[in-house]
Image (cartoon, rainbow, N blue to C red; front, side, top):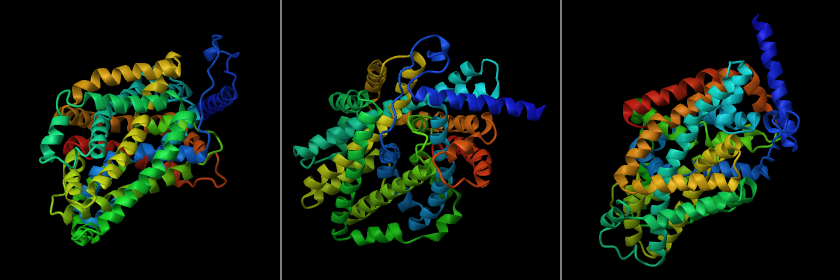
Length: 481
């Protein structure tokens, strides 16, 4: 009986793949209509180049966590010793979760709602399509919620960029009060809306003409700008002490469980594992792309971004005798004070906040893409209408979160209770609900060398277990990423 059921599921999987290939060529399965109802299926956008896809995924991963959290974690939790558990978790999660979400999206040709629904149908669950779509709402709405909060931070960065350009930032006598005025109730409406307008303006153009093209410019520029700042920081008197504190390993930290917990959290959240953004980007991916290679590059460049940021932040803070804090104060108060005291600091403040704005926009596009794609695919709306609806929601909710405490509480709730749950659900759907071997087959598309037996073991058991652990630890510690 079991073999018969498995054969039925395998046949359904093959039928689904055939239908997706037909849809990708411009004709919808089921007699040329969506779902066989005669409605023409809109051609789905795809990445124009492999490089564009990788840079977009790197852009989604490289964000505020690399700039204001990673340097703090390294400095406080063992220096170079912290990198040992961090790199272990990056490799483990990159070669399981990141590959899985990319492959899941590509296999189903849709975002989390559609992908979860198709997975349930493949399993033969009665009403599985509807049930899966409802479950898929969790990561989709989680992505929207975290994006709404993240947009507030982008607004702060836009304000600081303009203030550094016109000299206002360097003229501040109390940087804490300056930031406090911005991060207050309705204290930054104009720049908040500016950040959203730029982001949604790019997204309206679509995946290949908008998101991909912009990431091809912004991501390389981000790395170049941060390297420029790192070179300048290296010339500061006293920076050497910061390098020692950052790079000399304090091995005793490895005996502290907290070091491993926060290394896991940093790797998990920095790689954008949420069951939505990476999955959606994967759904625009062509079949001949090697997702294993793509996941490897995302993990490498995300780690490099964190290390470069650490080599900027920690030595600069030490050079001027300030404290290495975490979160928004590090970027918007501490580093701003550093540039005030640094010769030609105004110029380097501009460079920093240009890079920060770039990182925020590329991450935000990824977060907003999940609900936009859901409206397009599940409601049949146009790209412009979908982006417009999400934009209205982002403004209507986000303006009431401009207070620093409000947005912090909002982000904590979403990151602790929703984001890791979305990643867990996506892992269950792809590695357990879909037929056994289906995930491995999809991950091997575009590769000349097949994956080993390790893939099923590490994805079905290790990654799913780690994701469940992230949920538990996040609740216990009050957030680990």
